Image 1 (cartoon, helix red, strand yellow):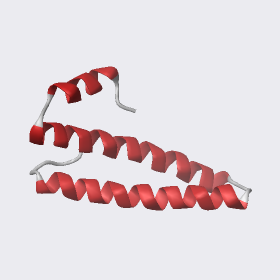
Image 2 (spheres, one colour):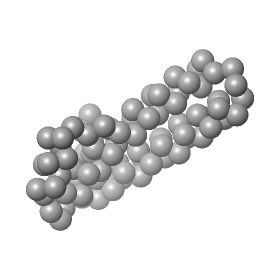
Image 3 (tube, rainbow, N blue to C red):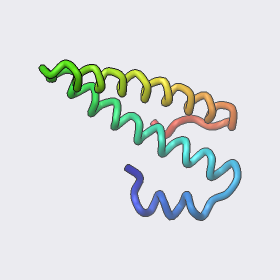
Image 4 (tube, helix red, strand yellow):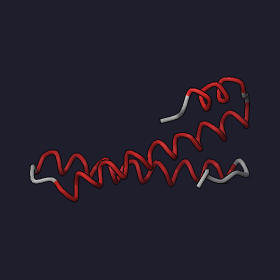
Length: 80
């Protein structure tokens, strides 16, 4: 999750700078979601929830790739 400081920074920006920071923050957010969902996949015994977690890993990983490409189009890279 973005910190209050990061959200304040985002609110203060506009145009390309806001887009870049937004994408960077969302990539970090999605990385956390992927890690959490993968952790559940690795431990789960309940099939429906395990399938849901797998789909979250897949979809959020795809979104990370898309957002990374959007950053590249803006001449930027992810935070880490």
